[in-house]
Length: 126
Image 1 (cartoon, rainbow, N blue to C red):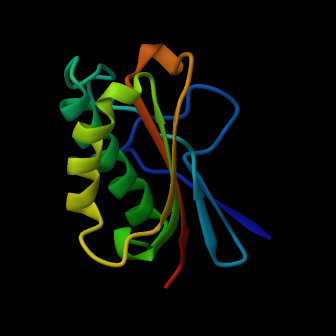
Image 2 (spheres, helix red, strand yellow; image 1 turned 30 degrees about the vertical axis):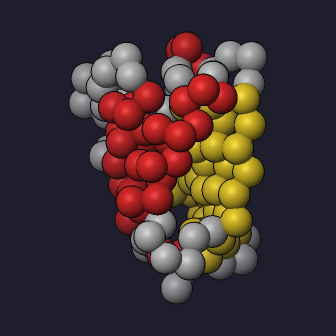
């Protein structure tokens, strides 16, 4: 059995996917980019602004699923440019100050709508 998660506090899915799915007590989020859910525009051109918006979007999705960042067990970070790693990592650490989840970070050729960053999470429902 699976439950589809939706919130108006994160950008809507722009294709045939859900913001998140809960299956067997595990939450799988779709990747989030740094788009404001109200304006549907990037919050800024820089990695810092986009990373902060990504985490705001992820927080909204996790909240809608009944979770928080403390419940995250795995993160995957996709960067358009690995030179943005240090700036992203500094902001990332603010959201996972202790007992951080496992993580993979990769540079990709291109992200949707030319985002600089996309992050997806896996969390357990408390």
